[in-house]
Length: 148
Image 1 (cartoon, rainbow, N blue to C red):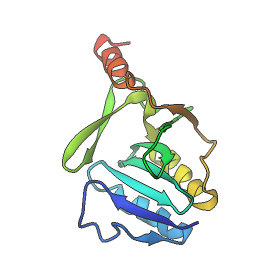
Image 2: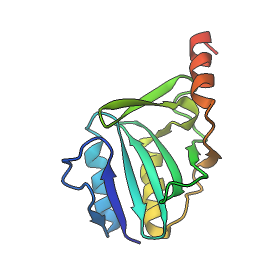
Image 3: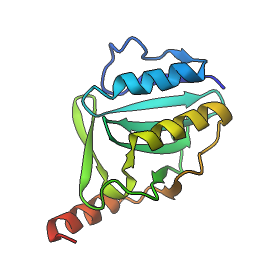
Image 4: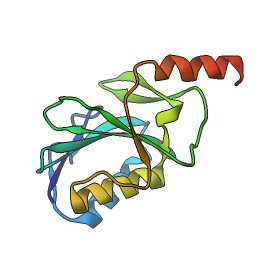
């Protein structure tokens, strides 16, 4: 499958809008972006689906959805949650976007999910997928403040 990469943070990213047609190039791209401040990027497949990912050095997130923006918005949920409460912030258009702890995954999981999507056009089964809960951020932040 061919995917297009879009950075929501850096319009001048040389890969912004470019097609990725080889698996190794997607892996190299993800690894090279780990050194950036955590940010949101999009990988749109030619099958009508996309992954929207928060890319950080070690903490990441992934949403799977239709490329036209319609619901459902399915969030990856790790069986080995790297954090249990609070949130992680990713940049999008120079604005910090908080992501609830329950949706935070490791970089290794992000890479495996993205490569599986590239190979098959499908969601990976290395994580569970939950519909985005608008209460998650408040619930996970309150739990962090309460020390739960």
